[in-house]
Image (cartoon, rainbow, N blue to C red):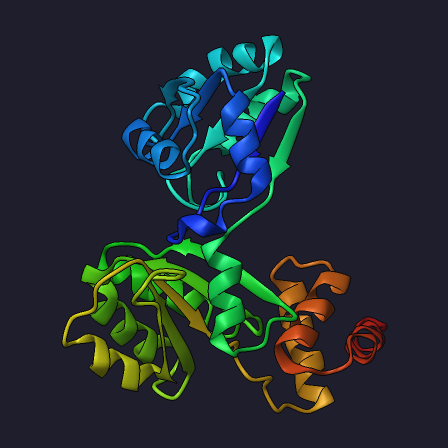
Amino acid sequence: MLILAATPIGNLKDASVRLVEVLEAAAVVAAEDTRVTAKLLRGLGVENRPRLLPLHEHNERERAAALVEIAREGDLVLLSDAGMPTVSDPGYQLVATAIEAGVDVTVIPGPSAVVTALALSGLPTDRFTFEGFLPRKHGERASAYRALSREPRTMVFFESPNRLAESLADLAAELGADRRVVVVRELTKLYEEAKRGTAAELAEWAAGGVRGEICIVVAGAAALEVSDETGIAQVLELVSDGYRLKDAAAAIAEATGLSKRTLYEGALAARRP
């Protein structure tokens, strides 16, 4: 089978007993960076030396089929450099190919920067969205933020420390200078830090330079204060753009906090001759 194994995101003591046991028994390991994996094996005191095969964003599509055949004959362990494979790391194409080929897939759960940053942020955790790495270019990054300006759920992003200040400035411009933001860096490491404030405050703080692995956690947009009549009009506008009535009512209800049933029935009544 194919075994997706989560690895520590900083502190080696976060490695699970299952992870060590599987690595001690593994014959073949597909690794995002074989050098990083070799260092991990040494750090965990694993005496086994499995065959290490590189699997990264540049070769995953072409190597997936061959790796699935290895998993068909015996267990294949998939590791990313840190955290859970497939989550902003290689592995999705391999998993999809394995499932299509009828090869069993299982997971050894463990550390994830996404949920760790979310839990540490102090922002609402009941509903959230993970948006991965932000675009490198200013225009594309600003557009990405703009598209999420009315997203009601807490948002989690990955960002490079070299682009953090510019990214936070774009965030303040598109989502509002007062939007609550938490920048989490160096999770589980010696210099772990969670810097909290408004988008404008953290953009100013980051301008002085920030190091380490970065997660940005952003509060969702507050519900718009609109009347039922305005909400129904917005539903009808979405319907005219091609949305199904049910989907339009759900979208406006989520954005405004209005009752989905009220919006649906109101729009349905307004459409009757």
